[in-house]
View 1 (cartoon, helix red, strand yellow):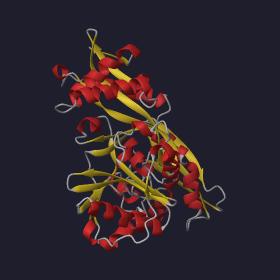
View 2 (cartoon, one colour):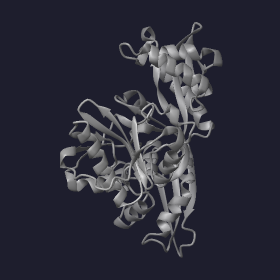
View 3 (cartoon, helix red, strand yellow):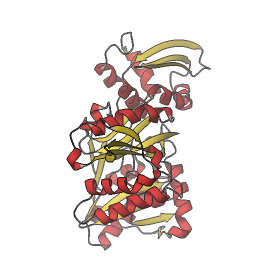
View 4 (tube, one colour):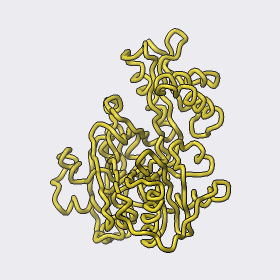
Length: 396
């Protein structure tokens, strides 16, 4: 039987070694071990007290580390635990230690005021067994640089990190202020974003970051204001690719991003993949509490819609938790609705990953009344389906 506990400060090297041995490829161990060791010493987003380990016979046989982030959900700043993958000693695999660690940690994480944890998994079976659900699709765009017109008046310049970092962070946080998925950045976080773009170009209206790969230029993020900026960004990215002799431009960009709208006339291809068992996955720890934190946004959605005269008394019920919220209290006509949904479904609703209609089909008795078009339209207004998305730079 394993003892599950939080990591002690003097054990960080042991966990860094375990992580590097399990996840590094050929020739990568030294770099990964050094990165993990440095992170435990210097990074405020990977505290040892958010690492749980399984100990057997005085030996750490498994670990699960969470990262302490702030992310946007419906424009609101929400504390989120970023999942750093479970690692177990190879000779102790398949003994259930990883699951023991996670099941012991999750109630403690909830008590620390985390409403959710999110990770990226190529094979999400382990997290699905814990109750995780997919909360964001995978979006990829492709563009042939040869088909994009040149940029006549180039407003961009290459950034200088020492001088421009604060401006880049401010642009990023402002540009993503009303979205779901991006992390909220500050100067402390930037050095620890291991997927940062290698080249950044900025102007007064915004910036973009890219990274070169053999025969491919990858877009890591685009943030800016106005159609002129986004059209200029498309043309500048294509020009950079052409100068390097590269035709293929790609990257993760959500389909509702204004960059996509400006790139479409130049032959953009968009691929949206909605998986059930992998990708961006979330574990809902307190989904009713999470939705309560979004109340101001939900009020605004209702008050600015065709249902602006309705004061909605909304009851949310999940296993072990329940609450009621009065939305749009200035509405003259009262309406009462209740939703009984599993934790994961409520998280998908909060993040806008799945539509109300699809969730009501999967859970036909969720409303306790017929899901009429009027009911669905009203709930769609409060919980619109969208494109939750985390830029590649933010991923961990």
